[in-house]
Image (cartoon, rainbow, N blue to C red; front, side, top):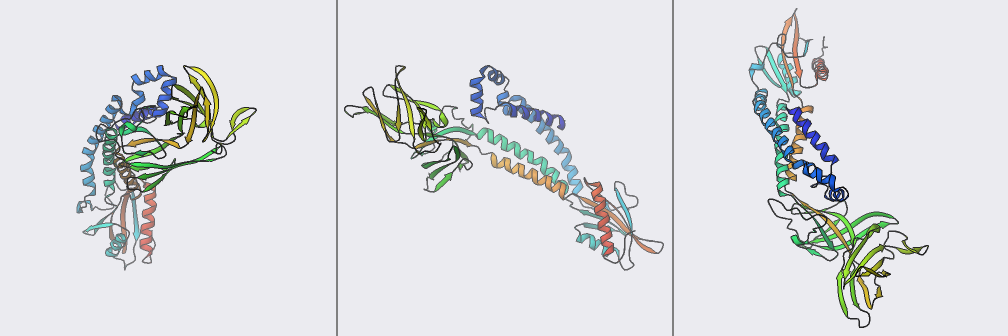
Length: 443
């Protein structure tokens, strides 16, 4: 049953890796949906784009944990029985069943049973003895690791449930100088409205974006540094691989854009008609637009403006000569096309459009969930249990010291978990070394 359930879950995970999931790859999912609406609608209907929380997957998980509970119900008494240490495990090494390694060693006359047991204790064995027989065990509690490994799955389950029901996901765009105080209406609706948690609240975080510095060398983007100041005034420097974490929420840098302060005025009188910081997603050759004063402005950005064969181009991606190429439309008719450099102005149709400032803006992907520490704890315990189980594995020995033809002889039987051949080598070296310490050789 366990094998079948793990096989089904593996198949589900394979589908999840192949099909973009709404919860995990939101931007890719919406791009895919825009290009193939019929296919994505079909997969949506089968819930294959949200496969990890679909009824089929939840049913398989339910069966998996019911099966795991039944297994643990059977195994826990067996684990308790295996770690019990009693005289009942003392047996004659010549007749006891279940021991794969058996050997006989000649002892020097001065070596007593007490010396043998003392040497075994130094090697980490716990010893019971009675009537000339002894039983030894090393790593007695190793079977507990089996229980810990399986119990860790319950922690992973709890962590997954807590994550699903406390998850917040949203996009937040802030420019230099903006202060964010956790307002829900500051999150973007496009490309995806914020996903609210079923329990708990959105991130209760307050900070100010102090500085945004894109790092570029020639035509290579080398990084992005964003400096935030939290509510206590402490500064945090973020980059692409270093998010800001607060209130169990992670703010990951996603996009960079321009946010020039543009003022539209009457060219003759100088009277201001309109003005705003305009967020433009126009880097990497993208074309964006904004509306102001009844006009539509289509914008293309050149960070290091030049002309090649009379056409606008950029020498590098460095911000050496930032210039906007702007097409101006009114009532869907093209009025003109002009260049607007940083700090410059253009005149058209009796109006003037001036750029006063040119700060940057950044888009954060904001994620918050409370189940991640529980998940990590579960995975840590599972890993610890596996290491414990297979490195500090259990060894058992039964033995006796007897006289054979006037010579003292150590008779032993031993066994270990998992590694039969390695264990036989280990026991051979162990007893040979024990006897050699007293000046005798094994036979």
